[in-house]
Image (tube, rainbow, N blue to C red):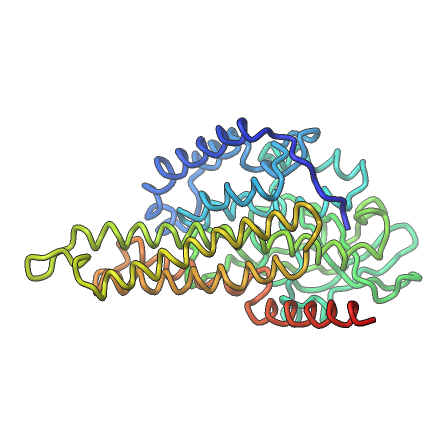
Length: 392
C-alpha cells in the first residue's frame, strides 16, 4: 500500500483554489447544464477552461505538473463538482482518480514521466479499463488475459462501461496473466489508444449523466511491450485496483454529498417561491419536514466524507471507512434527490427542471466504483476480520 500522502498545498492556497472552482462551477457550468444534457457532451470551451485551471491534474503530484492536492482537499473540490452536472467531473475524474492514481502509486519512474505530465495538462485523457461483462464491482471474475510472448504481452478480452473510452488517449487496463510464474494473477498495463487490436464500441446510451461518455472496449491480441506493465511486476494489479478504488469511493462519497446539496438548494428555492392557494408551499409543514430530512442527510454525508478522507490520508482506515462513506453518501443522495422531486410536485418530473436531471444522475452513484451491495459485503467482512484478529 502506498505511504500516506502529505499536503503540498497550504490551507491558504487551497482556499483560493476551492473558491475559484466554486465560482467556475456555479457561474459557467451550472448555466450550461441543459446544453450538456441535450448535446450529451462537455462543450470544448469548458474543457479548455478546466484544463487551464489545472482540473485535469489537481490530484496528481506537482513534480509532474499537477496541483498535488491530497484526498482531504480532493473531497472539498468534489463537493463543488457534485453541485453541477456530474458529467463535467467525469471528464477529468479518471485522470485524477482511479486511472491516474494507479500511476502515482505503482508506476515506474519512466511510466510516470511519460504519462502523468500530459494527463495533468489535459493533453492526455486516461480511462480505467477494469469492469467486464462478468466482472464488475468484484474483479475476481475477470476474463481478459495478458499472455507473455517472450518479448512483451498480448492482451485479449472485453471491457464494459469504460468511462471516457471514446475520448481516451490511454487505457489503464487490467488483465489476468498467462504464460509466466505469475499465472492467474491480475496485472495492470498501459495501453495507448490506437494500438492495433484495440477497438472502442459505440457510445452507451444511459439513463442519466448525459455528457459522461462510456463505451465497451475490445482487446483482440493487442501487442504491447514489457514497459507497459505497471510497476514492472505482474502481482501489482489486484492490489493497485483495490487501493485506488478505495480512494475513489471517498471521492464519490463527496461527489454525492455535493449533488445532494444542490438538490436541497433547488428544493428550498422552489418551496420559497412556488405558491399554492396563495401561500408558498414551503409554509406547509409536510414540505418543511421534507426539507429538514434533506438538510440532515446533506450534513451527515459531508461529515462522513470528510471523516473517511482523513482516515484514508493518514492510513488508519482504507477499507471500512471508504466503503461506509460511499454506501451512506450515495444512498443519501438518492433519497435527497427523490425528496427534491417530491417538493417540486409535478414540476419536478419535467425535463427542463434541474431536480429531474439530478434524480437520474444520482442513481448511477450507487452502482459505479462498487455497488451498495459490494460496500456492505466489504464492511461486514472487514469488521469480522478485525474481530478475529483482536481475538487471536
